[in-house]
Each structure stands twice: as C-alpha cells, then as structure tokens.
Amino acid sequence: MNPGIVEEIKKELIRARDGYIKQIGREYELKEKHPVFYDAAKEFLGRPGKMVRPVIFALSYMLYSGNPPGRDLYRSALGFELLHNCAVIHDDIIDNSEKRRGGPAMHRLLKNSGKGNSGKRGEELAIVAGDILYALGIKLFMEINSVPARKEKALDKVLDTAVKTGLGEFEEMLLDKADIRDIKKKDILRVYDYKSACYTVSGPLQTGAILGGASKRQVGNLGSLGNCIGRAFQIKDDILDLYESGKSRERFEDIRKKRKTILMFYAYMNASPGEREEIEGFLSKKAPGGSEVERISRIFRETGSVEAAALDIRSSLTEAEKLIEGLSIGKGGKRLLGGYSLELVSLKGLSL
Image (cartoon, rainbow, N blue to C red):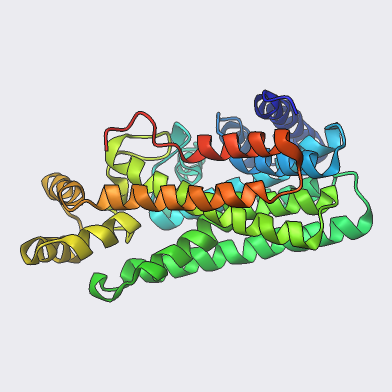
C-alpha cells in the first residue's frame, strides 16, 4: 500500500468535510432558520485538526477490505470526526477550557455569537450543538457501502465505544475529586483506556476492520493493539503539557486544573515527604497561582515522573509492535500501521 495514503486520506476527509458542511446547510436550511448554530458549526468544524480517528477508521477498512477507497468511505469516516467534535465540545464545558484547535471552545464561541448570550447560555447551547453533531455523525457513518450484517456489527461497536468513552469521562471526573493518597496507577490507566484508547484508537480501528470483513479474532487483536497505542497516545499528551502549548491548551494546563494524570501519580509516589506535602497543599487550593504551578512542574521533573511515563510509552509500543506482527494485513499494511502509530506517540524533539 502506498506509504503516502495517510496524507491522501486526510485530504479526502477535508474535501468531504467541506462538502458536508454545505450539504447540511441546504438540507436543514441552517443559514435561514438556524444561523447561530450554522455559523458556529461551520467555523468550529472547519478548523485544522489531525483527524486521527477518521484516518484510523479509513485505514483499517482499506487494509482489511482490499477495496479502493470511495466517496462513501470518506463520508463514513467523517462521521467519526463529528462524533469527536461532540465529545470535545462537552469535554471543554466540563473542563472549563477556553480554546480548541486554535480558536474559542464551542461554548465560548456561542457565548460571543452576538445574540446576547450569557456564559451559561453559551454552555447550554454548546451541549445541544454537540448532541446535534453526534446525531449527524451517526447518520454519516451509516453511509458506508457494506453488507447490512457488517454495518449492524460496526454500528454496535461505534455505540459501544461511545458508552465506554462516557464511562471514562465519568471516572475521570470522580478521580479529579479523589484524594491523591488514595489513587492507584490502575485507576488512572482505566480512565486512559476508556476515555482515550477506546475512543481514539481501538473503536475506529475495530469498526473499520469489521466493515472490511476481518474475523472476530482479528477484531479482538485490534482492540488490544488500540489499547496499547491509545494509552501511549494519552501519556504523550500528558508529557506535552509540561513542554509546550497547543491549539487546545496552554502549557501546564493539566497541572493548573489539578488533573490526576500519570505524571501526577509518579511525582507523588517518588516525592520526598516535603514534596508530597507541597503536592497535597497544591491540590487542596481552589485556584493555585502561577508560581505554584511552576513549582509543581519542577517537582514532576525532579522526581523522574516524565522518564517513568516515557518508559510506559515505550512498553506500550513494544507490545503494539508484537500485536501488529500478528495481524493478517500483509507486510506493507503492517509497516503503514506501525509507522502511523509511531508518529502518533513519538516524543522526538523533546528534551526529557
């Protein structure tokens, strides 16, 4: 398979997205009857993004079906991007995040829509907007040209992924309120496996393979593979929080919001008694100051939490490589999937 296929998939997804935004504008008369939603959705969906989930879905389908990609595949894959947008819209409200992909989060966008919305009204509108995108995403997903039995199984997998993603979010919110002294590594990894691994990698990977005709055993192996890659993907994101700002966040956002990440866990476990007291004091404060945030970031580095997390990434990747070798997709497919997986979780360029 052409090694440039990933970039080609992204280009086709962008074409499909731009065309679909125009389509729903016509079908639902959004410009005329629902201009606030249409303007916000058009601006929000049109922002540049990695499109990881639809790429993985399309790639998996192509590897297992052997069929050339068609318009239906890219539109179906775009359904995963709409589902992702629903999730991040709701997530940004929960986390009180201000940014998403280089622009305002949806609730901030709707607050500033010029219709006299208060901040609360912006959040309420954003929740409904996310729900609309979820429904549109399911409709798009079902456009794939496949046998009915496979489509039924694939839809079941999509909905199963949505349930697990919600459970991951639910558990993360409980974890945020838990005492750091009571948290175990398995608690954090369970959230990562549900909220990140299943939603970002396993779900799209398995769904594409189901539609492509993969066996039940192969689909199960892809679930294990997706968990490895997805867990590493989330841990990488945790590490990036210490080193750089992104389109969706400011540097140290995880620390500022007192999230119980794997880095926080390792730092607390490896800390001296005095450092543990500092961490506990920091987590007990309602609104820690900038200097306090900087201090906790230094504790993360000084206790070796970053190196420990990087080892977890390498361990996950080692297991992922073994699982990829066992897939029945040919050498070219294995190289392609392995290369894209490595690209997703690479820490290249960071001075750890």
